[in-house]
Length: 398
Image (cartoon, rainbow, N blue to C red; front, side):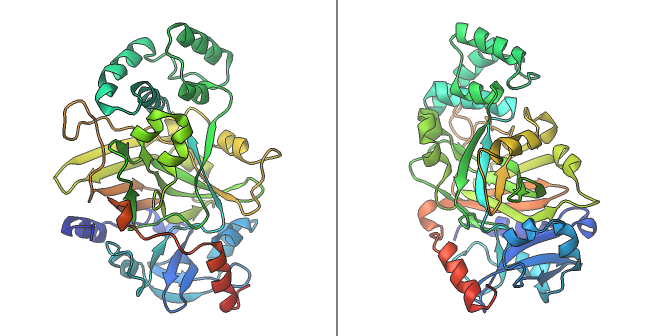
């Protein structure tokens, strides 16, 4: 059992809903053991309302409705309990499916992610590459990068003439990198983070593979986008990353990013409406807190105002004439957070330990809470698209 008493207390004490929850249109998914499957829910006055129907058997179907927020606000459903009851579920034992509990708030959508969209984390990716995944070399390389690159790229518009001049300069200095290419070049890095239905949600464990000794959380805003490319809402995500694996070669990105229980999304999707707009997303502040069983504490903040590419531009680079997503997608927007605070040996920076409590929060989106465990102790992903379709059919929803 991974979560210690501290983790449980923190999870119970924290209100995981947005600060303005009464003005928020929130949807998500829960596991209903009596139905042996998931249901689509909304939050209404601290109650969990099951709004699964033949019209909207999945989150994907709600996102596809033209005015999703209006539909949800007027949707009737079954009251299945208090929000507090779902938070108090023993998520430390996520093999327990005998109680109602939260799932990741997405289902049929593709799960994509943008990388290197903040200057601060972009430099850390360069450092990973130059260090070849060895954390002991990162400190010296970081000093060299800051000396040569400094603030030169902090206000550069990706793909601009000024960006090309910086590129030419860094090539001369032998400091050009594939990460700088996607950071300030014309094309964003957009990759597949995880498969539909494979993400874990609020309270679940995040899996740490034994091959990694240098890894970190990546707190991010995640957009919910329909099949036409419209941004319909947002939630929080942890684009958990194995720095030592990706640092060896960018071709190992899949190995570093897409593993069992490596993608956490939640707690709920907040739909765009009169109280929550694209402007709110662009001005979001994302907070991170890591508390270790060893007493180690790490805090950080990521400001969306410092993103180097406009979120709308990232969406356009992901979906359009060049690529379609008939079931929509969830899009991680990237993070400026790249922890360098030493944990253990001096100069080795931060890495996770088993039992870490990880909290990602945003006042408009609530709190996403998970704990770190060895990947072998995390549930294997077994409920896929075929299982979902069979379950919905048995419930006469499709």
